Amino acid sequence: MKHDPHLTFDPDRRKFLLNAGVLTLAMAMPGTVLGKFLTREKMGIVVHSYGLRWNASVQSPEFPGFQNALQLLEHCHMIGAGGIQVGVQNWTNEFATLLKKRSQELNMYIEGSIGLPRSEKEAAGFENQIEIAKSAGVNIFRTVCLGGRRYETFTSKTEFESFKEESLKGLKRASKIAEKHQVKLAIENHKDWRAKELVEIIHWLDNKWAGVTLDFGNNISLLEDPDEVIEILAPFAFSTHIKDMGLLTYENGFLLSEIPLGQGVVNLEKAVSLCLQHNQEIKFNLEMITRDPLKIPCLEEGYWKTFENLPANELAKTLRLVRDKGFNGKLPIISNLNPEEQLSKEEENILACLEYSKSQLKMKR
View (cartoon, rainbow, N blue to C red):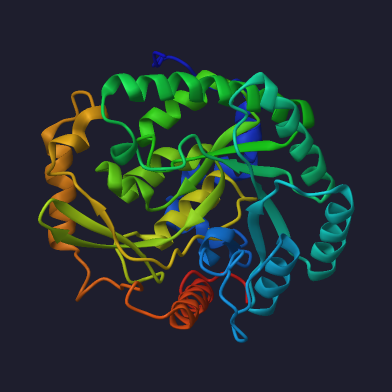
């Protein structure tokens, strides 16, 4: 797939991505100012923020596990969130009807998360999930191409190219179904695509129903500055994973960890304002994953297998970021906690992020 530098959006697609009034303001005002003039709804919560509690086997009286989207919705309403982003697989029509009724009563939104149809055989099941979830009021579906991490999954450039070819076929298949049902397919930068690679994919799909789930922190793992990633991808964003990231050095590279909003390296106010500049309707979905820090082994040879001609200054720039804005102290570790303590820390982190969104990012209470 080659990127055509002269490729531009047609007028209909541009209208779809940018409200005309907002575009006019954007030309006259900096994004960090413009965002203050747009409505900031309550922050929602991605199901992965409750990775410990979702379908948990731990019997906790204080933090009981969530078994379905309705239970997650009810809890997120109780703690003051504005909506949820959650998987839509295995929903029935009856469950969708119940979920829609309850979300409307609570004045909460629901975004879906859905796996790509990797073959024509999977397309029918994918379309059925779209239809059922749409009946529940879902009109944005986040998807990913790679469940793991690029630098851990592939051991050669050839392996990565095969994955890319398969992913493009799945995305083309999925985007056509999304277009048929007039719902938005939002592809996440999920430690697989560098920002410009994902933009090329969006251009290649050439479908106004295909855009991005903009994760604020993932691409640090691919040696990209989070502010630059947000600037590149915000014009295409249908949805977000808002998060902050803590960084520290280790012998083979650096450690990367989701931490409560406001404690890390992401310029959250700028990011929120920029997203709103490009899309007034965008929702900010918290993905605060409570876990041990991830190791990014960028000083090991194997890390570089899928990166062709990546300039050395990209590595240097990232290591400077780690050095200059490294986390103050040790990054949080939960593997040394018992299950109940882990669940408590997960809830504590989410509540801290919700409070920050209201007090510092001026989202609705």
